[in-house]
Amino acid sequence: MPELTIWTNQEINKLRRDIDRLFARLRDDFAAPLFPRIVRDVPFIDLSETEDDLIIKAEIPGINPEDLDISVTEDRLNIKGEIKQEFVDEREDYHRMERRYGSFSRSLQLPCRVMVEDVEATYRNGVLQIVMPKCKPEPARACKVKIR
Picture (spheres, rainbow, N blue to C red):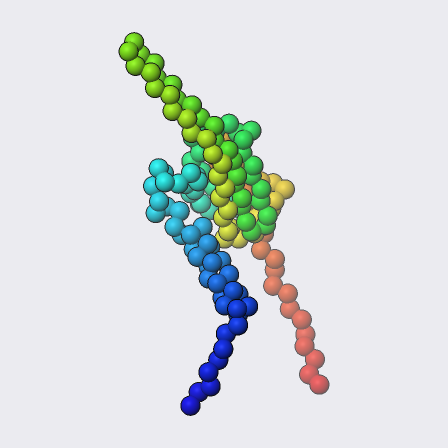
C-alpha cells in the first residue's frame, strides 16, 4: 500500500504561488484579445517581424506621449501609461461630460533578443509604433574535446 504523503502549509503555499504565476502569464500572453476594450484598459498590440526588426504597434488613443513609459530589455517590452481624457458635448438644452482616467501596464515577451540602444518609438493618430532592431545571431562555437 502506498504511503500517505502529508503536505505542509509551506508546500501548499508554494504550489498556490506557482499556479498563480502560471495563470498570470497565460492571461498576459494569451487572453488580452479576448476581452473587449470596454472591460480592459490595456492597449491592443500587434507584433510583426522583418528580417532586421521587430515592430510593435499599440492602440493607445487619446494619451499624451509624455504620459507613456516604455522600457525594453533584450527579450521583454514594457509599456506603462496614464490616460486622462474628458469628453464634453454641449447643446442648447443638453450638456454631457465624460471622463476616463486610469493607468495601464502591458508587458510582452519578445520572440528574440533586440538591440536595446537602437529602439525607436513614434506616436501618431493614437497608435504607438516601436521599432526594435534584432540582435545578429552569434555564430556557433566549436571546441575540440579531449578524450581521457
